[in-house]
Image (cartoon, rainbow, N blue to C red):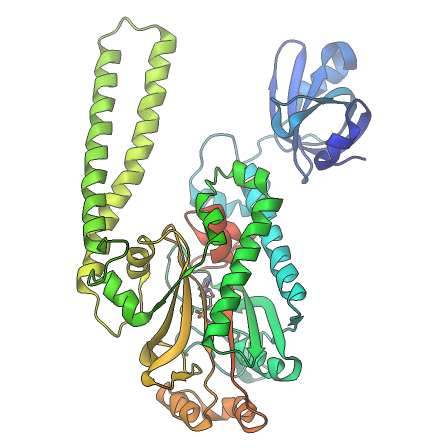
Length: 505
Ligand code: 4AD
Ligand code: MG
């Protein structure tokens, strides 16, 4: 049995492929099956003259997603998907099925999410999952190359890491336990044993929010390094992300093309990232500080004016085409050409109208951001729009960040946290920082956050026995994939998403 991804090594030879009918069209004497076998897609031509009438009739009866075995000669043909096609000599049907629920026509996302167990077979989802695989592999490659040891944090925990509001509580032999929000606290203990470690596991947040970047169960990669400060940490974040993005671009050109991903922004990660203190970031958001001679507020106002003008232009184009069609006298081909153009314009208008709705909110963020607040999605968008590379924001007001972050020794109001914001409106994909080593300050923070002290006694031991400066970060796997693939929502980046309102399939 051959795999579609290896067809280049079989040109001119006979192969056997096993897979599913992804698509099918037919003429009087030919059936064209797009076969998918998990490794790729390939057109198989079943010719009446080669297989005989009985087999040909079976071929015409094949429903979408029927499972089959085909044998035939591999012919190189650049115009075909994957660049090869199979001239079928014989085939067997494993199961001929009818009425596959996901037809070719457009379905709504809710329907597709209900059919997730089947939807995974579609070409876009296939491409996204292959990117996910490449991202995971690249992450391991990077850390292993850099001398990190992978260690696993427990999923059941007795302590909250990222605040108590979004914990999933479970019953652990009669005692309450929580599904972990982050492996970090354990990561710190493991770093003291091994020097540089990373965890890579599922994490859980009970956030009742339906946003495009929240999952209830997501995968996090959390390196933790002894003897690193906030600046070493930022160096590592930058090197790490650059390496992962470059490797994925190299390994997944076909997948990114299927997703119609313009890779300009991804390529930009080869350039130095921007590093801003929170204070500078706020000054930029509010338009008090310029970036390349521009203020956020002016940029956004320009964008809004341009968006409105574009919408008006497209609407008048649609009107002209519609009245031309209504006037009559056009050939059928010409009518179709215009109808297609109208459809395309309508889709573009939809996207532009979304911007038209969003930009005023962003302007509002820019005008009214209060110093001291955490960044919301709009604040992140306003800031990242000013740059075309990822932006790292560090030294945050300590009140808005987690209890474990170290205070800036020169300004105790600031905590040495860092967020990495991805470009193109994707926002925070990494959160991390240098850890507090002062036991007294940590105890104060645990009280301030109203966390149960007894759950943290082991954690405080790390400050009592050979305490050293250390730092780390957490990367949200699904958010990174959403950005790399430029998807509108994280739900498509994980095989079976778990989020508010979705537990099935
Ligand atoms: O910023 P967060 O909450 O940081 C931590 O959990 C730290 N303990 C990490 C560390 O320093 N070791 O989460 C880290 C990242 C976010 O930047 C985001 O990418 C992702 O995890 N994330 C989510 N992804 C999907 N759905 C959610 N609900 C997420 N919450 C956080
Ligand atoms: Mg965060």
